[in-house]
Structure formats: structure tokens, C-alpha cells
Image 1 (cartoon, rainbow, N blue to C red):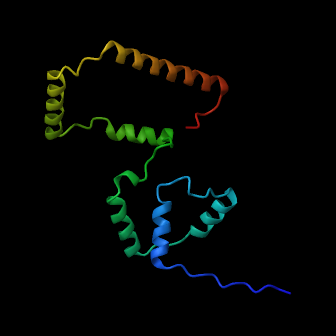
Image 2 (cartoon, one colour; image 1 turned 90 degrees about the vertical axis):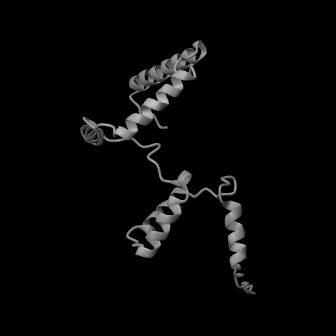
Image 3 (tube, rainbow, N blue to C red; image 1 turned 30 degrees about the vertical axis):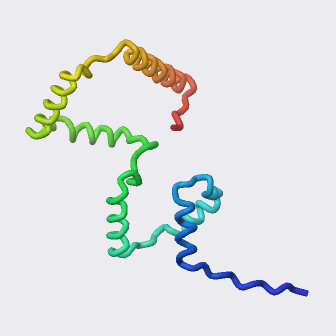
Amino acid sequence: MAEEKKPKKQLTKEHCEAISRALKGNPKLMVPKSEETRRKMSEASKGRVLSPETRRKLSERMKNMPDKVPSFRGHRHTPETIETLRRKATGRLHSPETIEKLRKAWEIRRANGKGEVSAETRRKISEAARKRFADKQRLAREGGRDER
């Protein structure tokens, strides 16, 4: 005989909030999504128009979460964008207030003896530069891109 399906239990708002709090910021509890699932989610959200109220709420929330602001990390500017940014920045001058802040910061660093770099720090900087150079050469030989 066909078994009767139990009706799905509705979760209370408190229960949903507790689950949300438990999952937030804990990647071990997050379930990875397959490529197909991610594609379906992408298709479902394309063309969706958010109301001005929703946009305002999202904006306010992002302003209050500086560590969650979307960043450009992991992306690269195209050569055209780099050229545009270079042209816009060429000839740009610091404001008098900024110049004053920079001057004061430099004076403080010099007074504290932090303008000097220790031999150990110089060695670490040199090693890091050598590693970057070797990585660039390796990538050039392999003809690949850095997937960082």
C-alpha cells in the first residue's frame, strides 16, 4: 500500500533565525552547491528587479558591514581599464589637507626611527621579491595564468 506522506512541518520564525545564526560565518556547516545548482540559481535571479525599498535596505546593511563590502579581490583590470585609470590619475594633485597629513605621518615615522628598515626586514622583502619574480617567470614559461 502507498504510504501517506507526512505534511512538512512549518518552522517558526525563531527556529529559522536560530538556524541562520548557526550557519552564518561557519563554512563547515555550509553545504557546497553543485555547478548545476549554482547555474539554476543564477538563471532564476537574472532579470529580477528589486524595489527601491529593498535596494535602500541592502545599501544600508552593506554600509554597516565594512568587512562584507564586495571587493575586486581575485579579479584583474583589463588593459583598457588600466589605461583609463592611468589617464584619470595622471596630474591629479593631493589636497592641502592630505599633504599636511602625509607630512605629519612622515615626521612621526622619522622621529620614531621607523623610517629605517632592519636587515632582517630587508632580507624578507628580498626573498618575497625573488619568489614573485620566479613565479612570473614560471607562468611565462608555462604560458598559463595565475589562478589566485
